Length: 390
Image (cartoon, rainbow, N blue to C red; front, side, top):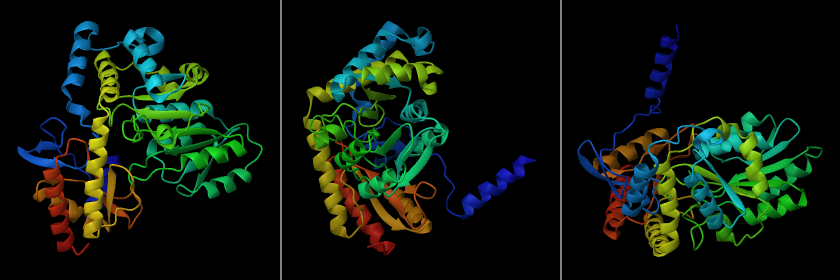
């Protein structure tokens, strides 16, 4: 009976240019990738530092398999808590400048585990309207009252907090770098507001880890925030080129989550090869700060080039650079024409972004060459003029 309903929904998506299909990448993840036997410049990966294919990180992963095997074989609370997990948490805490850290299997599992673990129907959550889907779903699972504040608007946040007394806990949660807009949340202002209302702050640093700050440790370093009484989530799967996520903060928070976060408790631990890759990635970033300089320079070149051509890149201040197109039809067409010209940059459509705000979401990496950036700018100019976007 449900088959017809599924077919009808798929037909609607196809007729509305909202149908998604998977493309098969046949190469490693680098500045160039291979699809159907053809090379494309990739502008959609979160591989900001180029670590996804770094020889030292691959070697660390291979050596971990040789020494510790393929799998942790159990959850951390059973027999899956291996020495490598503890080592990664120690290195992560040092990297983030916090008392301790706890590894989760991915960023989505971290957010849907941490938020419900800290809240119930006695609590209130204040969430930025453009927060990631994992935060939204974590809020839904929490049973707490959820207030949505205007994007990056600390004054609206303050107003909502002032109208919501009487809750056991009030938690403010925000992305630091927003994955579809590339802008940065005003974390110092949010922390100031939180202090006025005795609220807890949770910052999702997924797209800031390995990107923001002179050491690449994220938004707190970027803003010079030294207060440790906050919770940070981040991932090893983007700039660090590995997989998994972490929560960093106090040892008390770590111990609490070990006992209360269901997405931590009830899943097999990450395998040794992944953990070793994350350790190697942090060590590599600590040893080579020049790679951050290359990332920042490439980002500057591409963003300034796009803006010089007349494209609207919103308020991007990071390697995530959106090009606002508008309609679904134009955005899909723009992506297809780029693909024909050897550029892989996918269209971002509803429900990921609102109607009328469809875009090409590009990401620049440290391993893009200057010539590749110039080629991409020429392709964007040609397609933009052809579709009368610029």
